[in-house]
Amino acid sequence: MEPQKGNLHEGEIDMVVIPLLAFDKQGYRVGYGKGFYDRFLRDINAQKIGLSLHPAIEKIDDVNEYDIKLDFCITPTEIIKF
Image 1 (cartoon, rainbow, N blue to C red):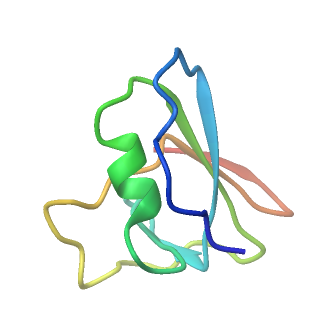
Image 2: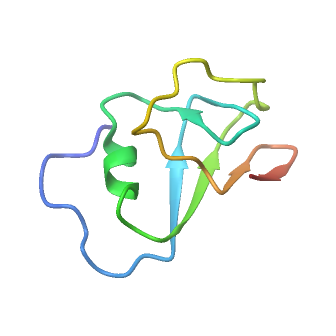
């Protein structure tokens, strides 16, 4: 499900678990579109943890200035630190 429109959380956040479709070895991810997580993560200082069913791809080619890198990604076989 997509997040509903509304105000973003404004309190302290230690960690955000982020669903994704794919991620690369640099820590960039392909999500579900619309940039919700990138906008949310832009102004907070929290650990960014991706969850993926697949291993990292070499490189995502269409990374832009608004994309936020992950700190870690958890797959079924490993935990990767970026």
